Length: 302
Image (cartoon, rainbow, N blue to C red; front, side):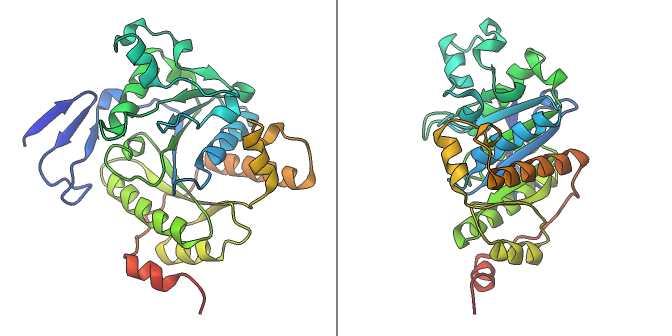
């Protein structure tokens, strides 16, 4: 087997078992996250993954868990409702010390947010110049070097858009469960189907399994439920399209900091219920993705 070494990863040149005809970024065994429960959140771009991830992190912290959220997007906006600011990325701070990681302190790239949630923005390479998998590897390496993962109960990777290339699938090598955020519409469900394929590929070589789908920004869930029933997914939670959620982003706040109202309490309780069920452990799912034409025929109304 011919291999090419790159930092913290190895690209296999033979047709790999976890991606027909593709090149897969392989996890360095030394970079495994310890005993924390690790979740990777995926979904169509703009569907509310960062809102979902941040409020889920807050909910875990409300349950007394020590939480670390890692944003995996060059926009580095995953955690700003937790920290109230845009944090520098791991790549930014590494570049500032000419990539001599030994010169960095924890406070250079890890910030404490709402209710003690620890926040990291991994960032990403400039467009068209690198691989997101390398950035994830650098971030986990730094966290391990500084022993930040030793005392963490929950790690949440908030992953860029619906990209499912080997690099942006890298968090799946660390995660125990992958979660998909989707709205009750064709485009979101089409993206979800692609993500199901990616997770299925990684599950052949890694422990990651699908935990289920989180319905977001939708009053109804009939199309999501139709797709889930067809492929073998579970719906874990439902967050409707409420103005208080939109306003929480504008206020740079989690939903647990917003002015109290009956509809807000219902959403908070749903996040707490979701966090408790994920902590207790969800059934490992192995759904079968559909062909594009099958999705087209399945969804919609007669």
